[in-house]
Image (cartoon, rainbow, N blue to C red; front, side, top):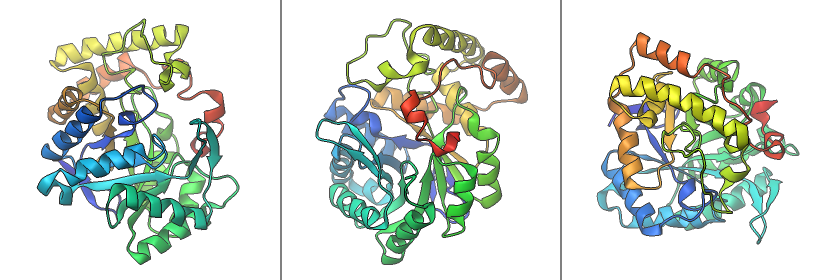
Length: 333
């Protein structure tokens, strides 16, 4: 396993992390036994970073990871947990905004520690900026948890350059978690340069755009009613067909290289800088194995040029979230 460091102050982690959200929420039903087996397989392969959110399945995902860690043997000590908090949910599964008040930060952390069955959280971050609470107060509360030993490192999620600077002025920031892929490259203009300037890593989620650029997505998918992608602009109507045309162009590059579409898409993210750690949202061992193969894909300048020609920056059709969710992203302002 290759390794990278989360910024100048964070821990060393595997070059790929495992994003566990889909094992509990937003992509339809998942197989619990297969999910746990996938976490174990990831740890066996040397993946050390497990990413979750306390609101994924209203705690289900943390409980799942906790169960997997209890049965992981020696690998348990190698696993690092990255946890997002702050999203408010209702009993019906609805969303009610974000809470970044210092008292809420500590409350969320207490429940996460219990569900995960761990004594500390390795990287802790609010999932979205709470517009009613200055980021300095939220980060300050996490810093107090660091001082108390409940959290090891502070992260950020989906915030813009100004917010990153303000947060970093309060306490050391290990990483920014944000969407980054061949068809989601908005961070390249301002956010990524600021992270590099300040010594902050990027843990990139959505590197396969929720399966859209994995090479496995159908032009006529049958989605469960609970699958978030059924409401995503990039997966809808003409947008979907346009985006899959991009995937077909990328497939030609991948085939010429002797790799899969998913592998070349992940390898592209890996190639964008040593400070970037892609999070792989695999729910099954076969998808995990395919993703791990990206670590062996070396992209030459000619390969990168061919990828750029197949999927130019800004080529995707549709926003990455529905309008209401886009409006909550500090990173998009």
